[in-house]
Image 1 (cartoon, helix red, strand yellow):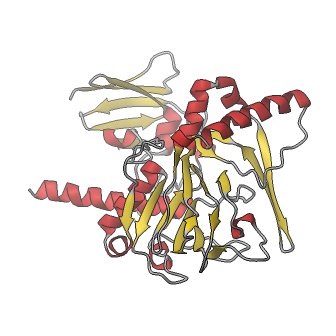
Image 2 (cartoon, rainbow, N blue to C red):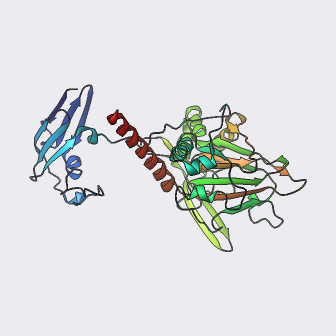
Image 3 (cartoon, rainbow, N blue to C red):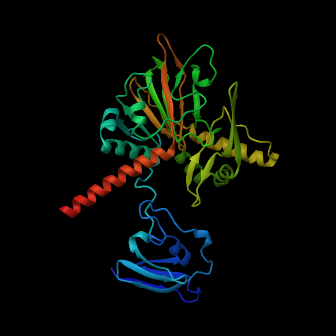
Amino acid sequence: MDVFVEIIPGTRARQLRVVEGNRETRFHALWLRERAPNAETLDPRTGQRLIEAAALPLDLSLLEASCDGERIDLTFSDGHHARFDLRDLHPAPRSHVVQQRWDASLAELPSADFRQALDSDEALAAMLESLERYGFVKVSGVPLTLDGMMPLVERLGPLRRTNWGGIADVKSIAEAYDLTMTQRGLEPHTDNPYRDPIPGYIWLHCLSNADSGGDSTLADGFMAAERLRQQDPAAFDCLTQTSTRFRYVDDSAHLESEGPLIELDSRGEVIRVRYNNRTERIPPLPPEQLERYYAARRAFFTLITAPELTLTPKLAPGEMLIMDNYRLLHGRTAFRLSQGVRHLRQGYVDRDTTASRRLTLRRQADATSHSLQESA
């Protein structure tokens, strides 16, 4: 493929134009200088920057530019010379996994086997990619012990501890200190929006379930948010622009945080939903603003509780749900116990360790595949 490079006239020699086939990209001189791939700029082992980027001259410019088809050679006005691989100038996508929005028509639940994910990097990678794609995965074959999930948790990183400890019991008790400990149904919600940071992934392991009711309910918050954007753009804008508050207080904890019910990234894409009726405490905003917010919240609630957007799997003993707490709204139907106890165990794992493990496994798999191709 032919590659053409030039320092763009009229930009005070501070922009580089690169044409690769049908793709044209412009790069700022400072952007190029601060990531020059040499030992004076970046540490060879860690890839971390050795120079102070903020101290580079703001009027830094390009003096020379050439390309041999694979690499670009540049000379900067501070006297620095650098050679870039063309492929390194284009950042890799953040994830190899395309997120798939879903509703109640999802024919087959994403699933994984506990023992396989424990023993095989390939199976663990597949589990984590399903989790990223769908926002949840059902794991079978989990040991029926109180800490049965822990060997798999430890394949990713540390368990997130909260004021309730590590893995907490979810079962009905006489003196319930949380509504999860009763036999009532629970509306769709995300967990712990009053924490900072909010726990990234919920691990819910079933030891025993009710003989009547007690089905889990799952709704894709990203799907609901996108439908709201399409059906009622004003309501969508209201929920992305209005920050609400969440609060949890008991004898040993006082937790508060805030944020919009629907959070967007810099590109306008939905990256997080918050919804927890039990702990939301909207501040006393101007009445006109609250009127809009309450109507928008109702529209969103209608979507996340709609049967056409809701899955209702029932966990059997030894099964576990891993759920993206930034995306999935979960709840349960009411239940009755004629004997025994409905007993689930719940823990949290943070997003950074989960994403790191998935991306590391993918990088290793790509490296192995590339090596095999070269040796073939």
